[in-house]
Image (cartoon, rainbow, N blue to C red; front, side, top):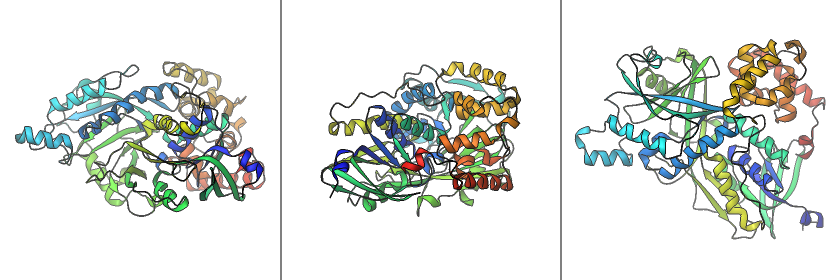
Length: 536
Protein backbone atom coordinates (compact mmCIF):
# COMPACT_ATOMS: atom_id res chain seq x y z
CA UNK A 1 0.00 0.00 0.00
CA UNK A 2 1.13 3.53 -0.71
CA UNK A 3 1.40 5.94 2.16
CA UNK A 4 -0.53 9.22 2.08
CA UNK A 5 2.75 11.04 1.56
CA UNK A 6 3.63 8.90 -1.45
CA UNK A 7 0.14 9.33 -2.87
CA UNK A 8 0.40 13.09 -2.54
CA UNK A 9 4.02 13.58 -3.64
CA UNK A 10 4.87 11.36 -6.61
CA UNK A 11 7.04 12.90 -9.30
CA UNK A 12 5.31 13.60 -12.58
CA UNK A 13 7.85 11.82 -14.78
CA UNK A 14 10.56 9.32 -13.87
CA UNK A 15 13.18 8.88 -16.61
CA UNK A 16 15.28 5.72 -16.89
CA UNK A 17 18.55 6.44 -18.71
CA UNK A 18 21.09 9.28 -18.62
CA UNK A 19 22.00 9.45 -22.28
CA UNK A 20 21.17 12.31 -24.62
CA UNK A 21 17.51 11.34 -25.03
CA UNK A 22 16.87 10.77 -21.33
CA UNK A 23 18.56 14.02 -20.28
CA UNK A 24 16.91 15.91 -23.13
CA UNK A 25 13.46 14.71 -22.08
CA UNK A 26 14.19 15.51 -18.41
CA UNK A 27 15.26 19.05 -19.33
CA UNK A 28 12.25 19.68 -21.56
CA UNK A 29 9.81 18.31 -18.97
CA UNK A 30 11.36 20.23 -16.06
CA UNK A 31 11.22 23.44 -18.09
CA UNK A 32 7.48 22.93 -18.55
CA UNK A 33 6.98 22.85 -14.82
CA UNK A 34 6.81 19.09 -14.33
CA UNK A 35 8.43 17.38 -11.35
CA UNK A 36 11.09 15.09 -12.86
CA UNK A 37 13.49 12.44 -11.60
CA UNK A 38 16.11 10.65 -13.68
CA UNK A 39 18.18 7.58 -12.83
CA UNK A 40 21.27 6.47 -14.74
CA UNK A 41 22.87 3.14 -13.85
CA UNK A 42 26.41 4.41 -14.56
CA UNK A 43 27.76 7.80 -15.54
CA UNK A 44 25.90 10.27 -17.74
CA UNK A 45 26.58 9.57 -21.44
CA UNK A 46 28.48 6.44 -20.44
CA UNK A 47 27.41 4.37 -23.46
CA UNK A 48 26.10 5.39 -26.87
CA UNK A 49 25.93 9.13 -26.23
CA UNK A 50 29.70 9.47 -25.74
CA UNK A 51 30.58 7.13 -28.61
CA UNK A 52 29.14 9.01 -31.58
CA UNK A 53 31.00 10.51 -34.54
CA UNK A 54 30.48 13.89 -32.77
CA UNK A 55 28.49 15.46 -35.60
CA UNK A 56 25.34 17.53 -35.79
CA UNK A 57 24.45 16.52 -39.32
CA UNK A 58 21.44 15.90 -41.47
CA UNK A 59 22.70 12.53 -42.62
CA UNK A 60 23.64 13.10 -46.26
CA UNK A 61 23.75 9.39 -47.02
CA UNK A 62 20.24 8.85 -45.61
CA UNK A 63 18.96 10.53 -48.77
CA UNK A 64 19.92 7.31 -50.58
CA UNK A 65 17.35 5.54 -48.39
CA UNK A 66 14.70 8.19 -49.16
CA UNK A 67 14.56 9.15 -45.45
CA UNK A 68 13.60 12.71 -46.38
CA UNK A 69 11.63 13.49 -43.20
CA UNK A 70 14.52 12.43 -40.96
CA UNK A 71 17.04 14.42 -43.03
CA UNK A 72 14.81 17.51 -43.16
CA UNK A 73 14.25 17.46 -39.39
CA UNK A 74 17.95 16.92 -38.72
CA UNK A 75 18.97 19.74 -41.07
CA UNK A 76 16.55 22.17 -39.41
CA UNK A 77 17.77 21.11 -35.98
CA UNK A 78 21.41 21.55 -36.94
CA UNK A 79 21.15 25.34 -36.87
CA UNK A 80 18.86 25.43 -33.82
CA UNK A 81 21.46 23.45 -31.88
CA UNK A 82 24.50 25.35 -33.16
CA UNK A 83 22.83 28.57 -31.94
CA UNK A 84 22.01 27.18 -28.49
CA UNK A 85 25.44 25.80 -27.65
CA UNK A 86 28.18 27.73 -29.49
CA UNK A 87 30.76 26.66 -26.91
CA UNK A 88 30.43 22.89 -27.44
CA UNK A 89 29.35 22.90 -31.10
CA UNK A 90 30.55 24.74 -34.14
CA UNK A 91 30.15 24.73 -37.94
CA UNK A 92 32.47 22.58 -39.99
CA UNK A 93 33.08 22.29 -43.72
CA UNK A 94 33.10 18.79 -45.20
CA UNK A 95 35.16 17.87 -48.26
CA UNK A 96 33.77 15.07 -50.42
CA UNK A 97 36.42 14.02 -52.97
CA UNK A 98 34.99 12.71 -56.21
CA UNK A 99 36.25 9.96 -58.51
CA UNK A 100 34.38 8.04 -61.17
CA UNK A 101 34.94 4.73 -59.33
CA UNK A 102 32.57 5.70 -56.50
CA UNK A 103 29.69 3.28 -56.07
CA UNK A 104 26.45 2.82 -54.18
CA UNK A 105 25.75 0.13 -51.68
CA UNK A 106 23.76 -2.15 -53.98
CA UNK A 107 20.74 -2.48 -51.67
CA UNK A 108 19.82 1.19 -51.22
CA UNK A 109 16.57 2.32 -52.86
CA UNK A 110 18.55 4.89 -54.90
CA UNK A 111 20.96 2.21 -56.11
CA UNK A 112 18.13 -0.10 -57.16
CA UNK A 113 16.38 2.73 -59.00
CA UNK A 114 19.57 3.83 -60.76
CA UNK A 115 20.44 0.25 -61.74
CA UNK A 116 17.00 -0.11 -63.31
CA UNK A 117 17.08 3.21 -65.18
CA UNK A 118 20.80 3.31 -66.03
CA UNK A 119 22.12 -0.28 -65.88
CA UNK A 120 25.30 0.67 -67.75
CA UNK A 121 26.47 2.66 -64.68
CA UNK A 122 26.96 -0.65 -62.81
CA UNK A 123 26.47 0.92 -59.39
CA UNK A 124 28.75 3.93 -59.92
CA UNK A 125 27.83 7.31 -58.43
CA UNK A 126 27.66 9.84 -61.26
CA UNK A 127 28.80 13.36 -60.38
CA UNK A 128 25.42 14.87 -61.29
CA UNK A 129 23.67 12.60 -58.77
CA UNK A 130 26.01 13.61 -55.94
CA UNK A 131 25.53 17.27 -56.85
CA UNK A 132 21.75 16.79 -56.87
CA UNK A 133 21.90 15.16 -53.44
CA UNK A 134 23.96 18.08 -52.11
CA UNK A 135 21.49 20.56 -53.63
CA UNK A 136 18.70 18.82 -51.71
CA UNK A 137 20.88 18.81 -48.59
CA UNK A 138 21.40 22.56 -48.92
CA UNK A 139 17.70 23.34 -49.33
CA UNK A 140 15.70 20.77 -47.32
CA UNK A 141 16.41 22.46 -43.99
CA UNK A 142 16.11 26.22 -44.68
CA UNK A 143 19.78 26.95 -44.05
CA UNK A 144 20.62 30.34 -42.41
CA UNK A 145 23.89 30.08 -40.47
CA UNK A 146 25.80 27.68 -42.69
CA UNK A 147 27.23 28.31 -46.17
CA UNK A 148 26.09 26.10 -49.05
CA UNK A 149 27.90 23.64 -51.29
CA UNK A 150 30.83 24.65 -53.45
CA UNK A 151 33.19 22.81 -55.79
CA UNK A 152 36.90 22.51 -55.02
CA UNK A 153 39.86 22.07 -57.34
CA UNK A 154 41.96 19.67 -55.28
CA UNK A 155 45.04 20.35 -57.38
CA UNK A 156 45.02 23.91 -56.01
CA UNK A 157 43.05 23.86 -52.73
CA UNK A 158 44.91 23.04 -49.47
CA UNK A 159 42.34 20.28 -48.81
CA UNK A 160 43.85 18.36 -51.73
CA UNK A 161 47.37 18.30 -50.32
CA UNK A 162 46.97 15.26 -47.97
CA UNK A 163 45.00 13.27 -50.57
CA UNK A 164 45.94 10.77 -53.23
CA UNK A 165 46.82 12.77 -56.38
CA UNK A 166 44.17 10.85 -58.38
CA UNK A 167 41.52 13.06 -56.74
CA UNK A 168 41.23 16.27 -58.73
CA UNK A 169 37.76 17.44 -57.72
CA UNK A 170 35.71 17.64 -54.54
CA UNK A 171 32.45 19.04 -53.28
CA UNK A 172 32.46 21.02 -50.05
CA UNK A 173 29.35 21.33 -47.87
CA UNK A 174 28.44 22.31 -44.30
CA UNK A 175 27.53 20.40 -41.16
CA UNK A 176 28.33 20.81 -37.48
CA UNK A 177 30.56 19.35 -34.76
CA UNK A 178 29.45 18.71 -31.18
CA UNK A 179 31.10 17.58 -27.95
CA UNK A 180 28.61 14.73 -27.51
CA UNK A 181 29.17 13.75 -23.87
CA UNK A 182 29.24 17.40 -22.81
CA UNK A 183 25.91 17.90 -24.58
CA UNK A 184 24.40 15.25 -22.32
CA UNK A 185 25.87 16.67 -19.11
CA UNK A 186 24.75 20.21 -19.96
CA UNK A 187 21.21 18.99 -20.57
CA UNK A 188 21.31 17.27 -17.17
CA UNK A 189 22.65 20.43 -15.52
CA UNK A 190 19.92 22.55 -17.08
CA UNK A 191 17.28 19.99 -16.09
CA UNK A 192 18.54 20.10 -12.50
CA UNK A 193 18.57 23.91 -12.51
CA UNK A 194 14.89 23.73 -13.48
CA UNK A 195 14.07 21.38 -10.61
CA UNK A 196 14.82 17.88 -11.88
CA UNK A 197 16.46 15.32 -9.61
CA UNK A 198 19.41 13.64 -11.39
CA UNK A 199 20.74 10.39 -9.92
CA UNK A 200 23.91 8.78 -11.32
CA UNK A 201 25.22 5.31 -10.56
CA UNK A 202 21.64 4.49 -9.63
CA UNK A 203 20.15 1.42 -11.27
CA UNK A 204 16.40 0.91 -11.62
CA UNK A 205 15.94 -2.66 -10.39
CA UNK A 206 12.15 -2.82 -10.77
CA UNK A 207 9.19 -0.75 -11.87
CA UNK A 208 5.56 -1.79 -11.53
CA UNK A 209 2.17 -0.12 -11.76
CA UNK A 210 0.40 0.36 -8.44
CA UNK A 211 -2.97 1.97 -9.00
CA UNK A 212 -2.50 5.09 -11.10
CA UNK A 213 1.21 5.40 -10.27
CA UNK A 214 4.48 3.68 -11.06
CA UNK A 215 6.41 2.25 -8.12
CA UNK A 216 10.11 2.35 -9.01
CA UNK A 217 12.85 0.76 -6.91
CA UNK A 218 16.44 1.91 -7.38
CA UNK A 219 19.79 0.70 -6.09
CA UNK A 220 22.25 3.57 -5.72
CA UNK A 221 25.21 4.80 -3.68
CA UNK A 222 23.06 4.82 -0.54
CA UNK A 223 21.24 1.54 -1.08
CA UNK A 224 17.65 0.85 -2.07
CA UNK A 225 15.15 3.64 -2.55
CA UNK A 226 11.47 3.75 -3.51
CA UNK A 227 10.09 6.31 -5.94
CA UNK A 228 6.58 6.93 -7.26
CA UNK A 229 5.72 8.56 -10.55
CA UNK A 230 2.67 9.42 -12.62
CA UNK A 231 4.51 8.50 -15.82
CA UNK A 232 7.61 6.51 -16.72
CA UNK A 233 10.01 7.15 -19.61
CA UNK A 234 12.22 4.29 -20.74
CA UNK A 235 15.18 5.98 -22.43
CA UNK A 236 17.52 3.07 -21.77
CA UNK A 237 19.29 3.35 -25.13
CA UNK A 238 20.84 -0.03 -25.96
CA UNK A 239 19.19 -1.40 -22.80
CA UNK A 240 15.68 -0.21 -23.78
CA UNK A 241 14.56 -3.78 -24.56
CA UNK A 242 16.02 -5.11 -21.32
CA UNK A 243 14.25 -2.38 -19.31
CA UNK A 244 10.97 -2.90 -21.19
CA UNK A 245 10.78 -6.68 -20.90
CA UNK A 246 12.85 -7.28 -17.79
CA UNK A 247 12.68 -4.31 -15.40
CA UNK A 248 9.15 -3.21 -16.29
CA UNK A 249 7.87 -6.60 -17.40
CA UNK A 250 5.88 -5.52 -20.47
CA UNK A 251 5.71 -7.79 -23.51
CA UNK A 252 6.04 -5.87 -26.76
CA UNK A 253 6.36 -6.67 -30.44
CA UNK A 254 8.66 -3.66 -30.84
CA UNK A 255 12.38 -4.05 -30.49
CA UNK A 256 15.77 -2.66 -31.36
CA UNK A 257 18.62 -3.67 -33.57
CA UNK A 258 21.98 -3.17 -31.87
CA UNK A 259 24.45 -1.76 -34.38
CA UNK A 260 28.08 -1.19 -33.37
CA UNK A 261 29.82 1.93 -34.62
CA UNK A 262 33.57 1.89 -34.09
CA UNK A 263 36.09 4.70 -34.47
CA UNK A 264 39.83 5.12 -34.44
CA UNK A 265 41.76 8.21 -33.34
CA UNK A 266 45.15 8.74 -34.98
CA UNK A 267 47.92 11.26 -34.80
CA UNK A 268 47.03 14.38 -36.77
CA UNK A 269 46.87 13.48 -40.48
CA UNK A 270 46.35 16.97 -41.95
CA UNK A 271 46.78 20.61 -40.91
CA UNK A 272 43.52 22.31 -41.93
CA UNK A 273 40.24 22.45 -39.99
CA UNK A 274 37.97 20.79 -42.56
CA UNK A 275 36.53 17.29 -42.36
CA UNK A 276 36.67 14.65 -45.09
CA UNK A 277 33.68 12.58 -46.23
CA UNK A 278 35.06 9.44 -47.88
CA UNK A 279 32.94 7.09 -49.99
CA UNK A 280 33.97 3.47 -50.42
CA UNK A 281 33.58 1.21 -53.40
CA UNK A 282 31.56 -1.02 -51.06
CA UNK A 283 28.99 1.79 -50.80
CA UNK A 284 29.85 2.74 -47.21
CA UNK A 285 31.12 6.10 -46.04
CA UNK A 286 33.49 7.26 -43.31
CA UNK A 287 34.59 10.63 -41.97
CA UNK A 288 38.11 11.86 -41.16
CA UNK A 289 37.73 14.75 -38.72
CA UNK A 290 40.15 17.16 -36.99
CA UNK A 291 39.99 16.11 -33.33
CA UNK A 292 41.08 17.67 -30.04
CA UNK A 293 43.67 19.96 -31.68
CA UNK A 294 46.35 17.29 -32.31
CA UNK A 295 44.50 14.24 -33.59
CA UNK A 296 42.28 12.89 -36.40
CA UNK A 297 39.06 10.95 -35.76
CA UNK A 298 38.11 8.30 -38.35
CA UNK A 299 34.84 6.41 -38.39
CA UNK A 300 32.39 4.86 -38.32
CA UNK A 301 31.72 1.21 -39.02
CA UNK A 302 28.27 -0.38 -39.07
CA UNK A 303 28.18 -3.90 -37.66
CA UNK A 304 25.35 -5.80 -36.02
CA UNK A 305 26.36 -6.19 -32.37
CA UNK A 306 25.91 -9.36 -30.38
CA UNK A 307 26.37 -9.51 -26.63
CA UNK A 308 26.07 -6.88 -23.90
CA UNK A 309 26.14 -3.24 -25.09
CA UNK A 310 28.78 -2.46 -22.46
CA UNK A 311 31.21 -4.84 -24.21
CA UNK A 312 31.37 -2.92 -27.48
CA UNK A 313 34.92 -2.43 -28.67
CA UNK A 314 36.63 -1.57 -31.93
CA UNK A 315 37.83 -4.96 -33.12
CA UNK A 316 41.18 -5.48 -34.88
CA UNK A 317 39.19 -6.21 -38.06
CA UNK A 318 37.36 -2.88 -37.76
CA UNK A 319 40.64 -1.06 -37.14
CA UNK A 320 42.11 -2.64 -40.27
CA UNK A 321 38.97 -1.78 -42.25
CA UNK A 322 39.06 1.90 -41.25
CA UNK A 323 42.80 2.17 -41.92
CA UNK A 324 42.44 0.56 -45.36
CA UNK A 325 39.40 2.71 -46.20
CA UNK A 326 41.17 5.96 -45.29
CA UNK A 327 44.35 4.85 -47.07
CA UNK A 328 42.48 4.77 -50.39
CA UNK A 329 42.08 8.53 -50.04
CA UNK A 330 45.16 9.79 -48.21
CA UNK A 331 48.46 10.01 -50.05
CA UNK A 332 50.25 8.50 -47.05
CA UNK A 333 48.72 5.18 -45.91
CA UNK A 334 47.08 5.07 -42.48
CA UNK A 335 48.31 2.10 -40.42
CA UNK A 336 47.58 0.57 -37.03
CA UNK A 337 50.78 2.24 -35.80
CA UNK A 338 49.09 5.63 -36.27
CA UNK A 339 46.23 4.75 -33.90
CA UNK A 340 46.40 6.28 -30.41
CA UNK A 341 42.90 5.36 -29.20
CA UNK A 342 39.78 3.52 -30.32
CA UNK A 343 36.21 3.61 -29.11
CA UNK A 344 32.99 1.89 -29.99
CA UNK A 345 29.34 2.47 -29.21
CA UNK A 346 26.17 0.48 -29.73
CA UNK A 347 23.37 2.34 -31.45
CA UNK A 348 19.90 1.12 -30.48
CA UNK A 349 18.21 1.41 -33.88
CA UNK A 350 14.52 0.66 -34.24
CA UNK A 351 14.23 -2.81 -35.76
CA UNK A 352 12.49 -2.21 -39.08
CA UNK A 353 13.56 -5.54 -40.57
CA UNK A 354 16.27 -4.02 -42.80
CA UNK A 355 18.61 -6.46 -44.50
CA UNK A 356 21.81 -4.82 -43.22
CA UNK A 357 23.00 -2.73 -40.30
CA UNK A 358 23.80 0.11 -42.69
CA UNK A 359 20.26 0.10 -44.08
CA UNK A 360 18.48 0.06 -40.70
CA UNK A 361 16.55 3.27 -40.10
CA UNK A 362 18.14 6.04 -38.01
CA UNK A 363 14.70 7.53 -37.32
CA UNK A 364 13.21 7.25 -33.85
CA UNK A 365 10.00 5.64 -32.64
CA UNK A 366 8.19 6.68 -29.45
CA UNK A 367 5.86 3.99 -28.18
CA UNK A 368 3.29 4.84 -25.50
CA UNK A 369 1.81 2.08 -23.33
CA UNK A 370 -0.99 3.04 -20.95
CA UNK A 371 -3.03 -0.15 -21.14
CA UNK A 372 -2.46 -0.89 -17.46
CA UNK A 373 -3.10 2.61 -16.12
CA UNK A 374 -0.08 4.82 -15.53
CA UNK A 375 1.70 5.46 -18.86
CA UNK A 376 5.17 4.38 -19.93
CA UNK A 377 6.86 5.89 -22.97
CA UNK A 378 9.53 3.73 -24.61
CA UNK A 379 12.15 5.46 -26.75
CA UNK A 380 13.53 3.42 -29.67
CA UNK A 381 16.33 4.64 -31.91
CA UNK A 382 17.18 8.26 -32.62
CA UNK A 383 20.35 10.17 -33.42
CA UNK A 384 22.18 12.89 -31.55
CA UNK A 385 21.14 15.65 -33.99
CA UNK A 386 17.44 15.09 -33.37
CA UNK A 387 17.52 14.61 -29.59
CA UNK A 388 15.79 17.95 -28.86
CA UNK A 389 12.96 17.28 -31.31
CA UNK A 390 12.65 13.74 -29.95
CA UNK A 391 12.26 15.26 -26.48
CA UNK A 392 9.52 17.60 -27.72
CA UNK A 393 7.70 14.71 -29.36
CA UNK A 394 8.00 12.69 -26.14
CA UNK A 395 6.29 15.49 -24.20
CA UNK A 396 3.60 15.70 -26.90
CA UNK A 397 2.89 12.00 -26.32
CA UNK A 398 2.70 12.52 -22.54
CA UNK A 399 0.77 15.81 -22.65
CA UNK A 400 -2.72 14.19 -22.37
CA UNK A 401 -1.74 12.89 -18.92
CA UNK A 402 -0.73 16.36 -17.71
CA UNK A 403 -3.57 18.81 -18.41
CA UNK A 404 -2.39 22.40 -18.76
CA UNK A 405 1.16 21.38 -19.68
CA UNK A 406 3.22 24.36 -20.83
CA UNK A 407 4.18 24.75 -24.48
CA UNK A 408 7.45 23.57 -26.05
CA UNK A 409 10.25 25.95 -25.08
CA UNK A 410 13.72 24.53 -25.78
CA UNK A 411 14.29 25.85 -29.34
CA UNK A 412 16.89 28.60 -29.13
CA UNK A 413 17.33 28.41 -25.34
CA UNK A 414 21.04 28.14 -24.58
CA UNK A 415 22.63 25.41 -22.51
CA UNK A 416 24.80 26.28 -19.49
CA UNK A 417 27.87 28.26 -20.55
CA UNK A 418 26.48 28.97 -24.01
CA UNK A 419 24.65 32.29 -23.59
CA UNK A 420 26.36 34.04 -26.48
CA UNK A 421 25.87 34.06 -30.25
CA UNK A 422 27.93 31.80 -32.53
CA UNK A 423 29.38 34.84 -34.28
CA UNK A 424 30.62 36.10 -30.89
CA UNK A 425 32.73 33.00 -30.22
CA UNK A 426 35.99 34.55 -31.41
CA UNK A 427 35.52 37.62 -29.21
CA UNK A 428 34.42 35.61 -26.14
CA UNK A 429 37.51 33.41 -26.54
CA UNK A 430 39.75 36.45 -26.93
CA UNK A 431 38.26 37.98 -23.78
CA UNK A 432 39.02 34.80 -21.81
CA UNK A 433 42.60 34.76 -23.10
CA UNK A 434 43.01 38.45 -22.15
CA UNK A 435 41.69 37.97 -18.61
CA UNK A 436 43.66 34.76 -17.97
CA UNK A 437 46.90 35.26 -19.95
CA UNK A 438 48.65 32.36 -18.20
CA UNK A 439 46.42 29.88 -20.04
CA UNK A 440 47.96 30.30 -23.48
CA UNK A 441 46.10 29.64 -26.74
CA UNK A 442 45.55 25.86 -26.55
CA UNK A 443 44.36 25.83 -22.92
CA UNK A 444 42.08 28.81 -23.56
CA UNK A 445 40.49 27.05 -26.52
CA UNK A 446 39.96 23.86 -24.52
CA UNK A 447 38.28 25.72 -21.67
CA UNK A 448 36.03 27.57 -24.11
CA UNK A 449 35.06 24.44 -26.04
CA UNK A 450 34.20 22.56 -22.86
CA UNK A 451 32.72 25.21 -20.59
CA UNK A 452 32.09 28.41 -22.54
CA UNK A 453 31.19 31.23 -20.16
CA UNK A 454 31.37 28.79 -17.21
CA UNK A 455 35.16 28.67 -17.68
CA UNK A 456 35.29 31.87 -15.64
CA UNK A 457 33.58 30.15 -12.70
CA UNK A 458 36.22 27.43 -12.75
CA UNK A 459 39.15 29.84 -13.12
CA UNK A 460 37.81 32.36 -10.61
CA UNK A 461 40.36 34.91 -9.45
CA UNK A 462 43.37 32.85 -10.55
CA UNK A 463 46.38 34.87 -11.69
CA UNK A 464 48.53 31.83 -12.47
CA UNK A 465 48.22 28.09 -13.03
CA UNK A 466 49.41 27.55 -9.45
CA UNK A 467 46.30 29.35 -8.17
CA UNK A 468 44.17 26.51 -9.62
CA UNK A 469 45.62 23.94 -7.23
CA UNK A 470 47.45 20.79 -8.13
CA UNK A 471 48.25 20.06 -11.76
CA UNK A 472 47.13 16.60 -12.91
CA UNK A 473 48.77 17.07 -16.32
CA UNK A 474 47.64 18.22 -19.78
CA UNK A 475 46.12 21.45 -18.32
CA UNK A 476 43.78 19.52 -15.98
CA UNK A 477 43.77 21.44 -12.69
CA UNK A 478 42.42 20.68 -9.24
CA UNK A 479 39.93 23.55 -9.64
CA UNK A 480 38.52 21.95 -12.81
CA UNK A 481 38.26 18.50 -11.24
CA UNK A 482 36.44 19.89 -8.19
CA UNK A 483 34.04 21.74 -10.50
CA UNK A 484 33.34 18.53 -12.41
CA UNK A 485 32.72 16.62 -9.19
CA UNK A 486 30.52 19.29 -7.61
CA UNK A 487 28.62 20.51 -10.67
CA UNK A 488 28.72 17.72 -13.23
CA UNK A 489 28.40 14.40 -11.37
CA UNK A 490 31.96 13.20 -12.11
CA UNK A 491 32.83 10.35 -9.72
CA UNK A 492 35.90 8.71 -11.28
CA UNK A 493 38.93 9.56 -13.35
CA UNK A 494 37.28 7.89 -16.35
CA UNK A 495 34.31 10.26 -16.04
CA UNK A 496 36.69 13.21 -16.18
CA UNK A 497 39.16 12.15 -18.86
CA UNK A 498 36.89 10.38 -21.35
CA UNK A 499 33.46 12.04 -20.98
CA UNK A 500 33.70 15.50 -19.37
CA UNK A 501 36.92 15.99 -21.37
CA UNK A 502 39.06 13.90 -23.72
CA UNK A 503 42.28 14.46 -21.78
CA UNK A 504 42.78 10.70 -21.60
CA UNK A 505 44.46 11.15 -24.97
CA UNK A 506 47.23 13.12 -23.27
CA UNK A 507 47.59 11.77 -19.71
CA UNK A 508 49.93 8.97 -18.67
CA UNK A 509 48.75 5.95 -16.68
CA UNK A 510 50.55 7.38 -13.64
CA UNK A 511 48.77 10.73 -13.98
CA UNK A 512 45.39 8.97 -14.31
CA UNK A 513 46.11 6.94 -11.18
CA UNK A 514 46.97 10.13 -9.28
CA UNK A 515 43.70 11.71 -10.42
CA UNK A 516 41.71 8.63 -9.43
CA UNK A 517 43.29 8.63 -5.98
CA UNK A 518 42.51 12.32 -5.48
CA UNK A 519 38.86 11.88 -6.46
CA UNK A 520 38.40 8.75 -4.35
CA UNK A 521 39.84 10.44 -1.28
CA UNK A 522 37.73 13.54 -1.79
CA UNK A 523 34.58 11.43 -2.03
CA UNK A 524 35.45 9.27 0.98
CA UNK A 525 36.36 12.31 3.08
CA UNK A 526 32.87 13.62 2.60
CA UNK A 527 34.13 16.86 1.11
CA UNK A 528 31.67 16.32 -1.69
CA UNK A 529 28.54 15.37 0.19
CA UNK A 530 26.40 17.38 -2.17
CA UNK A 531 22.66 17.52 -2.58
CA UNK A 532 23.05 15.04 -5.42
CA UNK A 533 24.50 12.32 -3.23
CA UNK A 534 21.93 13.03 -0.54
CA UNK A 535 19.05 12.59 -2.97
CA UNK A 536 20.28 9.49 -4.75
